Image (cartoon, rainbow over all chains, first blue to last red; front, side, top):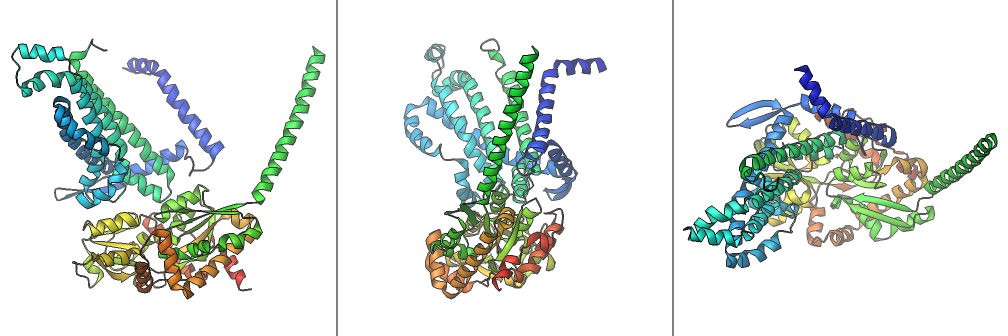
Length: 275
Length: 335
C-alpha cells in the first residue's frame, strides 16, 4: 500500500514540484518583495484565513429546519443552488432553441437577429432588470448565470445542427425516417452531440464566472461570490483570495466532472474518431 | 592571467561606483519628485452629504488655493459606496477622500495610512419604509427585508446598532441586504425589499416616486452621529502638511458657502449627478443632516463606530481617537 502511494507520488512528482515551487515563490514575493497584504496576501495569510473560515459556522434554513453547518458548506450549497438554477434553465431553453434554429431556416432568420442583439450584452448589465423582474432571491442570481450560459449552448447546438451531413439525412430518409421529428431524433441530435457538449462545457465555465456577479446585489447572505464581496467591503484581501481560489478549484472540479461524464459516457461511441 | 584578473576587478569596481552613483542620483531625484507633488486625486460619492467637494471644484477653489503649493491638476473619482473608495485609497489611488467615517475605520484597521482631518456632515440618512407597510416603532420592522449600504459602511453600522438597541437582532429578526444606492432604490421601487436605509438624496427620490416614506431619520438613531468626513493620506500629512492645511481651509470655505447658499449648492449637485434640482432642494429641506467641518464634533461617535465594528467582528482590533483623527489641521485654522 505504502509502495503504491510512493509510486503515485513519483509519477506525479513534476506536478507536485511545480505547485510547491509556485507556493514558495508566491510566499517569497508576497513577504519580501510586496510586503503588503492588500496588494498580495502571502500563502500563509491565505492559509490562516482558510482555517478561520473553516472554523466559522453558519445557519442553513431548509424545509422549516435550521441547521448549523460550517460556513464554507453553506456558501457552497448556496452557490451551487444559484449555479444549478442558471445552468439548468440555460440547458432547457438553449438546446431546443438552438435545435430549432439549426433545423428550420425560417425560424433561424426570425430568431437570429434578436439573439445577436441580446448576446453581446454582459450579464452584469442585467442586474437592474433581475431585481425588478425576478426579485432578490436565488432565481435572480440564477438569471444572471443563465444569461451567461444560454448563448454558448444555443450557438453550439445551432452550429452542430447546421453541420449535420446531408448524406446522413438522405440515408435516413431512404431508411424510412421521413418526419422532421424522426430526423432530428435519430440523425441530427446524435450528430450534433459533440458540438452541444462543447457548448455545455463553455457555458459551465462562463456561468461559473458569472456566479460572483450574480451574488453581489443582495440576492442572499450566503454564497462563495457573496462572501468574496463581503470581505472585499471589509478590505480583508486574504479572505478574498481564499474565496477566489475556492471558486477556481471548484470550477476546475466541475469541468473535470463534466468532461469525465461527457467524454467517458455520453460520447463514448466517438472513441477512436478523434481521441 | 593575473593582469587580466586585476583589470577585471578594477573595471568591476569602477562600474560599481558608477552604478551606485547613478542609483544615488536616481534616489535623490525620486525623493525630490516625491517632495514636489503636482497632482491630487479626490474620491467622493454621489450624495448631497458631500456637496462641499463639488462646490469647491465647481468654483475652482481647489486648484486656485492649492496652486501656490505646486498643485497643477485635481483629479477625482466617484464611488457608489465607501468600501470601494477606501479600497482605492488603500491601493494609493486617491489622496483625499470624502467618505463615511465607518469605511475609514474598516480601512484603518486593515492598514490604511490615513487620518480624518475634517468632518463633512452629521446625520442625513433616512430609513424609508414601503408606503403600504405600517410603522409605529422599531418592532414593526421585525421580519422585514431592509436594503442598505454594504458591511463596514456608516449606514450598515448605524442600522445594526440601532436595531440591537431596540431589541431586534439584525442577523435573525430582519434581513439586511448590502447594496449600492442604485440597486437599493430599484429594489424598493420594484417591491423587492420592504425598506431601505440610505443617505440623502435617495430617500427623497423614493418618496417622490410614492413607493416609500421616511419613518426614522438617522439622527433619531444616534443624535449628531458622524457621517461623512475628509480623510487624507498619511503621506500627505507627513510630507505635505501645508497642502493638507489648505485642503482643510478650502473645505471649511466650501462648507460655509453651501450653508449660506443652499439653492446654489443644490444646483451644483444636480448638475454633477443629472438630478432634478427640485428634488435636490427638497432633499436638503427634508433631511436631518447638517454640513459641518469641525472634526471635534464627531470624535466620540466615530470612536463609538469603531467599537461597534469591533463588536460586529468587522475589524479585529478596536481603534482609538489617535488612530483615526488628526485634529491639528482644523484646530490650527482658529489660530
